[in-house]
Length: 119
View 1: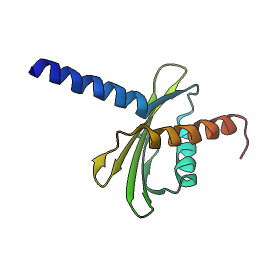
View 2: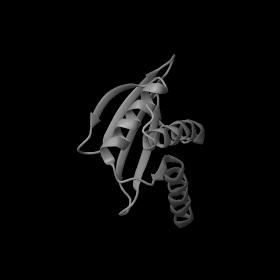
View 3: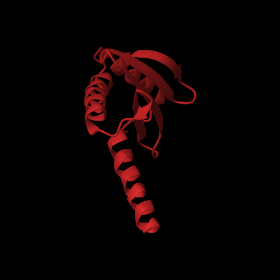
């Protein structure tokens, strides 16, 4: 049934979006973007492009393979920013939660330290 298939794809996209996104209790977009850049560098990524005005960062990790990560930061509501990561491996979207969990775990720690003004 085509309708069921379309709904399954939709639910898979929702699950993927949940894996790829985290909300942070801050409204400081610039500080968040700088923390994202630092986190990506700590994880071995090289920053390809950063647009602080648009809130987007693209980075590549070359470690015997090419893993490309695009991260966007945008307001979620009046008190939170939403960070969404999108990873590609060899030009295919990464749907495995592990790389996203590693990124967001590191980012959460960095966001905490940044909030405490620890460098």
